[in-house]
Image (tube, rainbow, N blue to C red; front, side, top):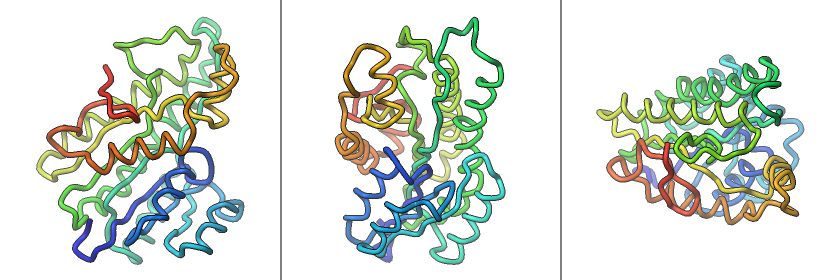
Length: 248
């Protein structure tokens, strides 16, 4: 928590699913300010409604692959708050499912652009604000997936998604490695198989009626890991929402 008593979060992909769940949970906390990045603020009805009740949410336009949006968001936050304590890079896609032999190359490019370049764009834009965090332990957290684990390779036809998550895991560990002197905490986290559109689609494809983890369970578990994260024990490692370390 900052010396002013306020903790500032930035969450991308905040208009639905896990991202919205993060905002809903954090909005209930005292002395908390949330910047919610969404593709189209005019359609972020749930966030608008929530902010009318809590008054601690700033809705910011953020197309995840837009360097211009990320830069504009950083400039706005610089003027409004001056720093960020925690960034949760949540925006991502999983739009193609099939064996690699027939996977369109465009799908690989699209998934890498959103799931890998997107978090890099966000980090590059917001790093100066993280570096001004009064907490002494700024955090950059990427919502990843067990499907990105090479050490525990799941036999599912999700190469575009899994490969992009393996790549963003590398990027996140590299951020950890390159920012030791800053005290930056950076790690990817697997949210579980969650009851979102993406999670339920995968669950039904493997014979389940729906994903087993609720959004609230996932978010509460992830926030516990994030809240308790330290440079020494957490940063540069791959976690799941229950606090279990996963293989790269």
